[in-house]
Amino acid sequence: MYKIFNYLGTSICNGICSPESYGAVGDGVHDDTTNFQEALNNSNVIKCEPYSIYRITSTLRIRKNTVIDLNGSKIVCSTYHCFFNFREGDSYGAYNGNGNITIMNGYIEGGNISFIHCENITIYNLHMSNSINDHYLEICASKNYRVINCSFTGMNYLTPNVLEYISIDTNALYQGFPHNPSGRNTDFYDGTTNDGILIDGCIFKLGESEYNYGYDAIGAHGRSADYPNSFIDNITIRNCTIKGFTDCAIKANCMRNLYISNNRIESDGDCIKLGDVVESRNIYILYNYLNSTNGQRIVKNRYSDLTVAYNSVISDAQNI
Image (tube, rainbow, N blue to C red; front, side, top):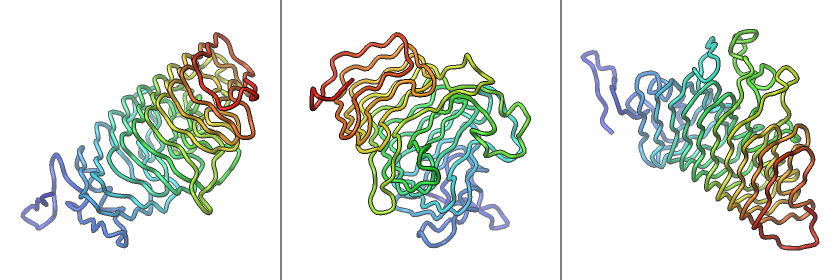
């Protein structure tokens, strides 16, 4: 990656650049937070140096129309959140925030990715591990959000009974997504839900030592009483491998048009839990391998229009 300097000797970069273009060292020791943020502030395409290790100690903020190609490099994040798609004071509503963002081809250790009010997000070939957090991906008020060929391995916990590796929020609410304090009581928390979530070819598993916690792999909690008719629409979970997790692999609350297909699920708890808090509708569970150590294959609480077919199981003694 070339570094470009102006006449004052300051590194500048238009178009594609790397964090090193703005002074990052990438040795895993130097704090590269400011340098990485400067690259994000000045370029819409970040291509990292391969094999670099960037030590990040505070949240990185992403603008719209940004591509981050980690290019085989690794971010070691010691802060609660690694990436946000908004900046302090933003008050976007609906899907009008910072969207058209891709993060791909690398590793993040620690931290999470929290996006809200956005459209067209792609998380591709990204491998996240060893986070002290509640979620790896927090998806809120997002449309057309794709998670493809990623892995999520091992987490410590803050609140163990709400710990999902991927959390699909039902509505944009202050109490549910409180990461923009100045936006409280503004249109930022307008109740927008998610529409169009694809999770494809991903691996979810517990880690080792203190990172062996996992409540749900993929989940949504109940909706707010302020939005009684809202649903998370058009969710597809396919071709994934999910192993472990004490509550369930997939928790489906408030989901409509949900397709769960061609997954291999070996859960310590239940495999799929439908509507333990809020009804889900129009559900297809097809061609999955389902096995539970201490729970059930499919727990049916609140649901309507459910199709279950062509699934394989270890033991017929397990209940559906």
